[in-house]
Length: 174
Image 1 (tube, rainbow, N blue to C red):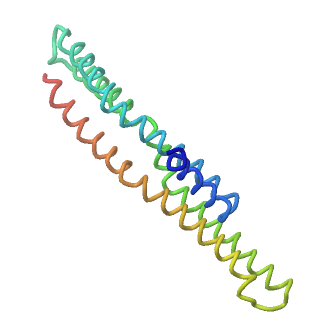
Image 2: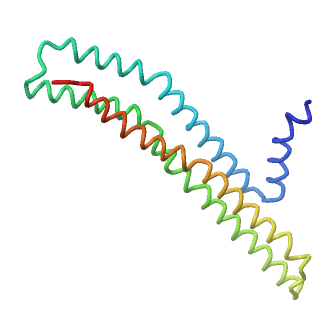
Image 3: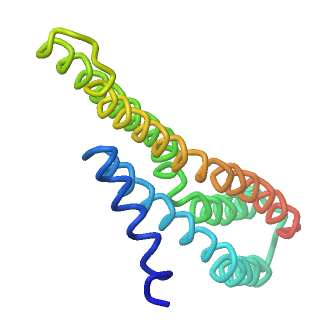
């Protein structure tokens, strides 16, 4: 039973060993990215309904809704809720493309190892080239896999923020 629970950790450790130090950085970026993704899911499921209800109750307690000042208050309320919904989204938008770039750096590093071994030995022996090419491909694969796993949630959050902002605007009647 314990072996089955530790299998993912052993797989990550093996991937880090095969891909080099940059795979560890990609892994850290991936853990950070998914922590932020889970935080946003939690926010939309648990916190946003309460914040929306508080803002709507505040709007409905206002004595008037027709003046220019009331319209500005309405815009400010919607803007604050939009800002809270968009929190951490810029960081996610940075982490998603960062992972393949780190993979690319690992690819270049691995290929440089290949060229160094070829220069030292003076020949293109397949055995000496294999470790560098393997390191390069592991970094590339890891960076792309982590990035692709975060693309859909970022798109989904953007879509949800846009939809929720429109729904908020509809709820705050004049």
